[in-house]
Length: 399
Image (cartoon, rainbow, N blue to C red; front, top):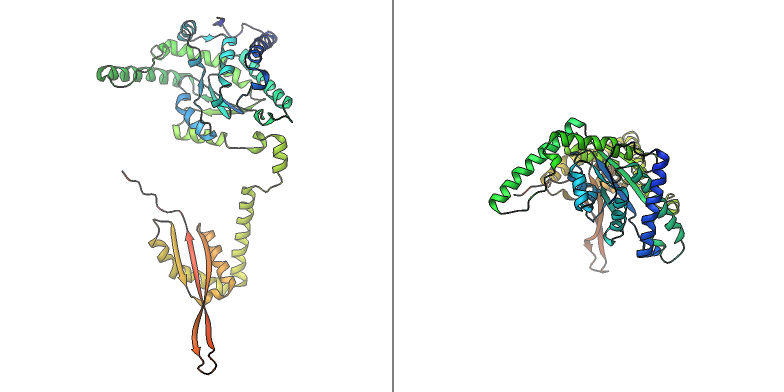
């Protein structure tokens, strides 16, 4: 097995690119031979998760998958490289050879469960792997063009690559690595004593501060620089992982927010872009609501005041009574609402206050007089205004 454990300055940039091209095309030809070109169906979306040791990749991977709707388990490169030689290299803080990493990874990505998306933990880690990633993206794009207009076109979709880096400084990384090791030792001792549970893998680098420091510096000198070099090519997300977990995850959520112009096929986006965005409609509606309320005060001050008094005096006591459910219904025959302006004002006032209001008018003919001679029945129309008010109810925790 080919390995590289020397300093990052082994290859010049030109040699690294040539080395990457040789490695990639060697692996790619193997895939074409073993699977057939029409079966090289890779994930549409790849999130390449890199991070300093102890930065919380394992902690946040499940959250990232949930945010992006990825159901498949993350691909952890270290678990793919489980040969004895690879384990010895990793124990010293080194890295397995680029060609073996690429070969195992691409074959894993062809599995059906990764068709829609995959999170990669630990790739790329070297400049050669970075160059291989660029070529891989180009090959996916080439496949998409090649099969465009064929019955298989929908299988070869526009690829989307995200580079996400979770970062902590050296001191924090070493502290977290050593704590992780100590916690694992305590946990394993409990498991051995009770006989219940599965033993946790304990890395040698999590037990020795010097090995932990070496692992961090290996990341900083090789992996970090490699990932940053992709900043101008793919969607790049830098996350300060020293913050509390809830802040880190909120930052991840903000970074991975859906952006159709980046993720959709350009042809699809061009067809859809003429439909107004929901955010734009909401913004415009809010501006129009403000204008209407101000106009009610100026043009219909008496009706406006009467509706406000009705809401405050008749409706709010009922709404407060049903505050837990978040839904209240009020029926009234109030003559005020015979004027359609009053109904419009009521709905707009509730909207401005954060409620959702609707009014249904129920009409009923009520007999008032019966003519015994002609048999004619005179009636009057009864109007019942059925008002439904919806709002955020109380969330009750049980147990």
